[in-house]
Image (cartoon, rainbow, N blue to C red; front, side, top):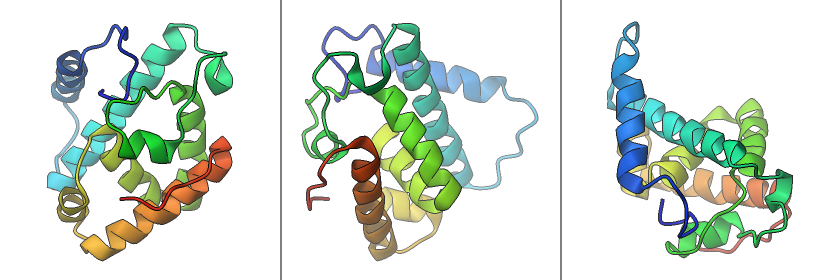
Length: 152
């Protein structure tokens, strides 16, 4: 949420609250692990943010507002990220190619998890998460027309 515009109507606590409500409403899910829970939570937060952006009339590629690259959004926590619709489309394409990398992006970008937290949740090494994050950022930057930076 710190990456959102200042005048965004969805507060961080409201996002978490909405994700929680949606998680507890799902009766048929058998939680298999902590990773499963975090994957679902980050996916729900992604859906909520994308749905909110689309409901507010965002046009594809920012609709004339200043867009911020994925690498900038990950590195500068107070920079608003405007184009959730384009990011969602790009993440769907990435998921079709490499679901694990898409999951890493969801956990890092939407749930705000650290490299270490993501590694524990997905039961992978921190090195694997760093590689997946770096490659996913580069792939998404190409898809979104951005230039990736070499930061964590």
